[in-house]
Structures are given as structure tokens and as C-alpha cells.
Image (cartoon, protein in one colour):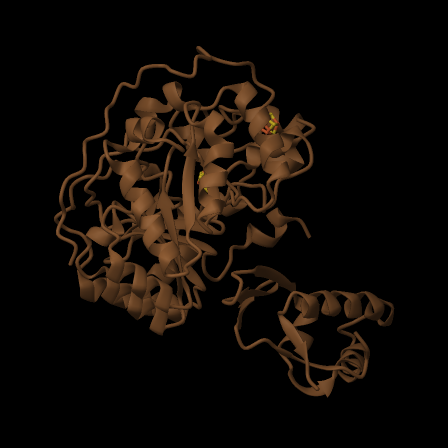
Length: 89
Length: 359
Ligand code: SF4
Ligand code: SF4
């Protein structure tokens, strides 16, 4: 996933807030995923802003370490492959 | 973060919520976990059941596992399921298949969020019917055909026993050959299962072979049922821990909430939805809080496989008289107890099929 990508949740996926972050459930293929708290601002975004911009904002607020960003992009890419989020085109 | 830490504080709603909608059943399988047969006089009314579904929707329960008894024996079954689906709660229901007619198959195939599991406990009438009752193999097969005829990818749920173990490959072929998916479940000594446990539980050798079979059949679902076998090597798919009260719970036909469908006993009853909201029982019942904080002690804690098996199934321990801190009665490192013959006579016989009005 690139910093300039904008993503949104798949419409067949429901997100339920939990202490650790959220549970995501796909009604399409019955997948259930544990979503870490740090991923929530990305996964629950509506595709309006690039993921890089959201990451920068979290870093500025002290909610995300800069060196965690590459790993985060990999995890988001994994969620895209699983059909949980889509890149908005 | 480990699964234990994640689940320690509890989830806002269960992941695996089983709802036994009725104790009525037209069969009397020898291993029935809920000892079903007769409808209980005080089962939840349609209005109470609808209100419960509304509460689950408000909690964002993603799906419910509907069982019984035989769910289709409940006259308002379709009304309740429609109500759940309208509220975006997926339905996975288990049926013995005997009451599943063409209209039901059409309805199932027309929905997006319904999964169906047909119970079949052998790949031949001889093996299956000795456990589920005369004629049940043919009825289950007919239900599979009806669903397949509608283009629906059904599941078959198979409780693996020492009698059916050698038929696993045949059952796999039968089910997948009809376009279905096989799910295998562990026999627990719950309900009537307690009486047949020693005669039907897998031998230790079968348990080892089952682990290897599951590893080579990743398309076979297990519902996290055999995680005690993960102690044998690489973990099987799933959380590999007892989810009772943590991610799992069961609401019985009277509205009693239990930690898991395999522990329908007063010690594991957390409350009743007629007295308190389901949400408050789930979040705050002392029993569930205790279970969430609990870790198995004793010998398991010094076992090298603890991280993969976590001490096994609470229900299996409880109903065999073991302490909850003991290893699972089918712990892979325990020696064989009792005879290993695959044809021990059953102390119970299933009742043949009884007619039940469908709607
Ligand atoms: S001793 Fe306990 S943790 Fe180890 S394999 Fe047996 S049941 Fe599992
Ligand atoms: S008691 Fe057994 S069946 Fe119930 S959730 Fe725990 S491991 Fe599963």
C-alpha cells in the first residue's frame, strides 16, 4: 500500500469497537478479524484522505511511532488483499 | 498481544453465540449435548425471542449459531430467522435435516446470510443410524440433495466417534462430491453424551491420526473443536483455547445463559434473559468475569504444549469429574484409559424418527 492511497471499508464488512481496537466481520465470506487499535483510524476512514496523511496526523499527536509506518502499510495491504478494505480509485 | 490478554477484559459481545431455540426434537440421538426430545413448557415466546434478537442487533452480534433440539420444530423458526437477518445478524443453523423440505431449501438458498449444517454421524446408514436413529441417514442425504439442488453450499456437521473414524475419507468424498463442506466436531461428555462417552470417544491412536488428517484437509472446518490436538505439533486453525464465557456463550430455549453449549449445568449458568438483559449478563456476570480471568493451573502449566492447547476443554473435564485444573481427559500425552475396541455396545439407543408438525 502507498501513502497516497485512500481506503474505505468494504460494504459487506461490519466493524465492532472493542477495547483492543475492533472486530471486523465480513458477511461475504464469514471472515472474522481482530483489528488492532492503531489500525482503526485507517480502517474506519471513508476514503476521503490518503493513508499517509492519516499516519502523519497520528505521528504528530504522538499516537503512532514513525518507524512503525512501513509495517502498518504492510498490514493494511494484507487487509486489502483479504477484501476488508478497498483502495478508492 | 496473546489471545488471553486480548480476551481477558471480555469482548463487548460474544463471537460465537449459540442459541438453542427449542428442546423439541423428532430424534433422540444418543450423544445429544442438550439431551433434547420434548419441548420445554416455558420456552421463550415469539415476542421474547424477537426482543432478544433486537438486543443482539444493538450489541452488533455479527451472527448466531442456531441449534436445539431441532430448530425447524419451532413453528416460528422462519419468522425469527427473518427477523435476525433484517437486523443484519447472520444465521448459522444446525438441523437433523428430517424436516427440511423443498420450501425450506428455497428459502435458505434465497438468503445471503444463512449457513446450514446438517448433522451426519457416519458415511453409511449402519454407522450413522446407530447414533442418530433409524432412517436418519437417508433423511439427511435427502436434505443435502434438496440444498444442492438449489445451488446452495451446505455444510455437514460430523461428530467424530471411534465408530465413524474410519469413514472420514468416505464422508469427505460424499459431502464434497455433492458440493458441500465438511465440518467435524469433537464428542463431549455433555448431555446424553456423558452416557456414551466411553463407548464413542476416540482412542488415543485415532486422536493422533485425526490430527494428521486435519492437517492435510485444511478445507474441513473444525469450529476450534480439536484444539487439544494442537499439542501434537503445529497448531490447528483457530484460537486454540477454551472460549467459554470469553468469546462463546449459549442461550437455551428458556432464556438461560450458559458459558458454552456444552456446559448446560447450573454451575455454568450466568443468568436468564427474562430477569436481566443479555448485554448485562454477558458483560458483568460474576461467572463470565471469573472465566475471563481464569487460566488452567496444575500440570498443564509446566507442559511444553500449553501455549498451543491451554489445558483443553472445560466441558470435557467437568463432565468426566475432573478438576478444571486437570489436563483435558483426552490430553494427547495421557495414556489410553479403557478398552480400545471400536465397537463397544452403546448403553443408549436412538429413538426412531417421530413426526413433528413443521409450521
Ligand atoms: S498437559 Fe495440559 S496443556 Fe499439555 S497437552 Fe495435556 S491438556 Fe494440553
Ligand atoms: S468448554 Fe469446551 S466446548 Fe465449551 S468453549 Fe470451552 S473448549 Fe469449547
